[in-house]
Length: 475
Image (cartoon, rainbow, N blue to C red; front, side):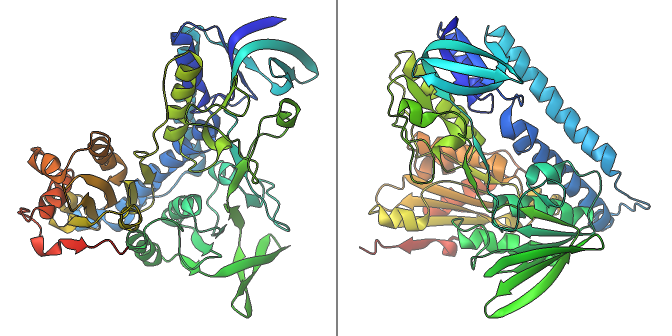
């Protein structure tokens, strides 16, 4: 029987960094995966979706905004098979890079389905062949999978997950998105820009529930401007297919309405992808939704078994999984390495983009802080206006007592790129003065971070300092 110091189940954005870090620390390491090196992120999540987002944004600008700049273009069209092929080339380049990194760090790769025999033994099955592996420590990094609902089983033909939607070789005339969360809005935006008539059905009264409404409202406005139909506080009841068209019955209040579509994207949530692992056999505890319970070191209820990433619950973020993987690899190697949850930035690739880190205003109040908020608008940024992207704002939330930065919210151009400065500021316990005194190059988008921080002290130059809002703790 082969034996390893560390086995990692799952080669996604949590698993492969965990394997590499464990190997760097002198362990013999095996990584086991069902066949998707790079996990959801590289195969049907982060990377392919962002490739499609980039392409759709480029296309949309050409046909809707180029003429504003004096650029006249005719006969613009989408070659969907070529677009999909390009998207896959980006994925494949990165997947090859991960395989090379694992090899360079002397990590053994096995393709197959893993299940626990005991807390120190694993069975790996590939087709009809199986072998057993012994280990000292193990990291579960199996991710999460999409949820179906009764009457709406994902078949990747008509009712699609993001995986099936991103693999389409054509642009559906009508696309229905059941679920107005992050995936539904990101991919709904892609296909709206590519020419689909998009219809979003959301059970709750707000899109992207849990994200600050002031940011979501800008995204909502843009969706409506693109002709996207929004069905809020609406529940999908049943779907029928006739003559190649899908007819979805939606309950809105006391009324049933029928909307049509060529494809349905179902994105209503995820559950832990731990089926077949036999976790109960070795006593690994899960919560009532099936997500694996862990401590700050990513240890499960079994001392030698660790878990990271989406299989441990929300937030479902690749960068969270990566950091947890590194923490787990260090912890099992004897390093006092703990996961800190204060500075996990979130990035949503809608139009405009949304990003945030730290506490919201509400969370700051709930934690007993009086706050002062500085805000700057991208309408005052020369760089944003020169890119025809003057919508949105930067909002810096600080402790009123010492001006320490507690949280930052950004909605606007390249918000996903800008948020890292805010994450560093919070991690380093910087205050508004630190950010405001840092000279930012001109003309750039990060200047708006500086202006928002300066507004807290009433020193902003390019935004009205009257935008400062002081909120007293309500307790």
